[in-house]
Amino acid sequence: MSDPINSPSRLSISAEAARNLATATVTPPQWDEITPRWLHILLPWVDVDGGVYRVNRVKRKPNGVSVDLLTVDDGEPLLPTSFIDYEEDPREYHLSTIQTVLHTHTRVTDLYSNAIDQLREQVRLTVEAVKEREEFELVNHPNFGLLNSVAPAQQIKTRKGPPTPDDLDELISLVWKKPAFFLAHPKAIAAFGREATRRGVPPPTVTLFGSPFITWRGIPLIPSDKLPINDGNTSILLLRVGEKQRGVVGLQKAGVTGEVEPGLSVRYMGTNEHSIASHLVTRYFSVAKLGEDAIARLDDVNVGNYHEYVYPQA
Image 1 (cartoon, one colour):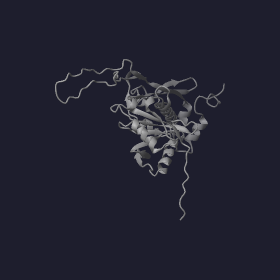
Image 2: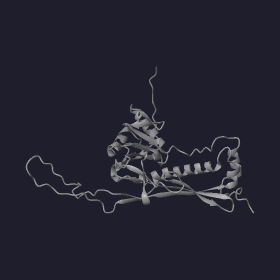
Image 3: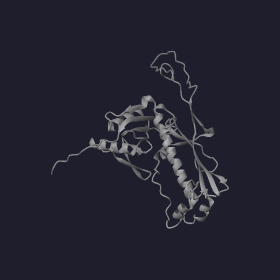
Image 4: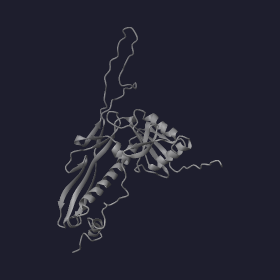
């Protein structure tokens, strides 16, 4: 009978890999694909009961206003009557789920966990992978992702390709009610820095969470490599966040069984006849836009434009 641990199609970490981690080292496994995930940190998160978050909106009347009002200077005019009406079919956001089953052989976790807890590291890295996938979906999911949630009136294109201060000012004019932050690919942020510097207005920096971020008009540009680049072009988002501001909010379900942090659980599923222990890793999440003007998108952002600077001879 073949050994399921040492076979090419093994279901859990091998004993050899575990020994390498347990001996001659005191560092946990290093994974280059892990990112800071600033978007998750900057989004306000709302706990959703029942797995559904309904966004109730006021219905606009045919004349374009919600309430009939009259400004009176003198006299006794007949006052208008009115009421606030609501949409009959408001949008509902259902929590999405990211799941995987983590396998660890009990022999490995028992024998090679003196210096570094093998199970803890396996769980930690699996959770990191789940969080990376979550941030990707927050940006790119076809139903609720930020890139696909922008109203047509909130979408603009760059004037000439590279992102300029004028382009970001246009974004600010669309999300002018307490804009919180720009979200852009690091290459797009670098491209904006080049264009701003070229025009003699290098963007200032601000320190958030112990890291420096460049800003424009006092609004930080937050990097995320989850925004795609296609043929040298990408998009830049500007967000307003928070329930009170009718902005963008993250959605999650807290208090689930085996919760290690709000909305994320690691649940023991048992050990099979091959001594392989299984843990179910689950993340419940979504993101909702409370106002149409809570997010705007700048498209056709070219990240490949560079400038040659000629300095006068001394």
